[in-house]
Length: 252
Image 1 (cartoon, one colour):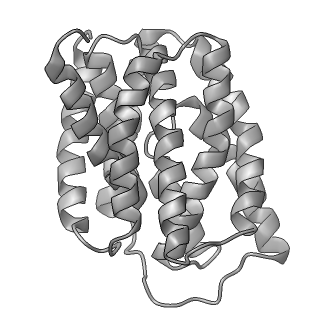
Image 2 (image 1 turned 180 degrees about the vertical axis):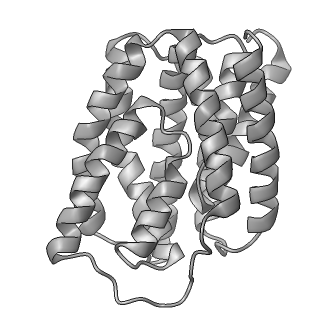
């Protein structure tokens, strides 16, 4: 991390990740391998990435709110549930061996590729949202477990959250995205705290990455959710496959 172009790379990657995460999800599948390739131990890369994720989702939430898109208090209920799950997941991530983490990340990458390729088309028409009664409780329980995964690694979770909110809560893609970024912001605070307490965060790298993440997230939250979607999916699939092969077969 001594070369000037490393910092430029972090900002550029952060911008792409922030945009991708806000429009859909899976951006951490790019940032995590980049952080590892730049020399951070896997668990430190995981913790450092949370700095950017917190900033990214704070900016995205503000961006959606500026466009009068908010799902409060539904997003708060889900966020609090996920927050407790994220604490559990983060403690698991702190203690996991680097080699094991790399294998798990590689498997997750392949799974996310399959979700991207074979998932049902997300409908953009209006729904009668289901955010109360039994559907609220179903969502609260589901997001506790989403939080465990989010605290552990977070990579690719955005796709799962969007699918869940679309088909269970029957939210449009725009409102599902607004809910997602608010929830991720809330539970990422607790996950980041765990990594900080265990000295698994490189603040210099994390804050530089966060510059790109925040700008990308702000821009993505204020443009059409359909703009550039096909390009993002294609680019993400290619990069995920390359990174998965690298992590699985080669030492970092």
